[in-house]
Length: 249
Image (cartoon, rainbow, N blue to C red; front, side, top):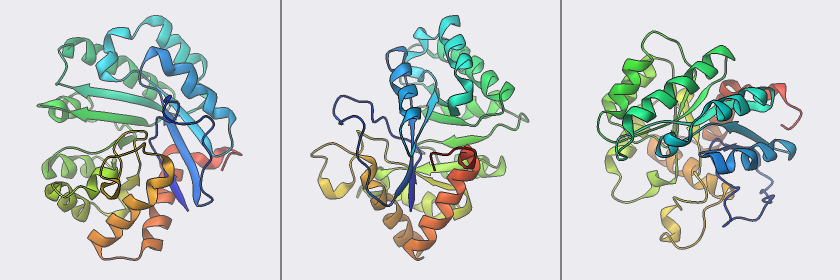
């Protein structure tokens, strides 16, 4: 059984509700801007689906008191706050830090993990500085950092989530990080509808049903049985996101 810990399946490219393969135990659906907060929340109503709410750094300018209140008002339905984080490719970094800080506080107050987006120069450094000694529960979504970033994340007890880009021929360094990170700290994700596995040559739409490609590549890199990857990563996701509390799983 697999758990896809990050899939934007409310996208118009994917049918709603999406029909999952039998070996998909759960899918976590994060929002990323104000227009899809309600769309992500709707997935809480479907069997095997869970949601988290947050504003992605690209859309940090949209974050407001109303959105903060919307997240808090639906906090009992959430398994995480996300997708939130920092991305220095965009020119709104000061606003990102402000919005990220407020969403981190929501996660801390309500004891929820965060689904974390970090990309670009100094994004990891800034994050580690902002969260130093604060004991957050973290899923490092679609990890893109260095080996040193991974080591620091592990020192903090964070989970590192790998997506279908570990199957891309050019991502040699990323596969070295996969090999380094203990299986007990690894999560699986597809980041649907983008980031198709390499086998599709980037033609088509990615879905949670492709999660097995991530697991198979991890098993290959680590020279372990696929069943072990399935079992351990599933338990990791259940533990971090407290999925046992729900009848959906």
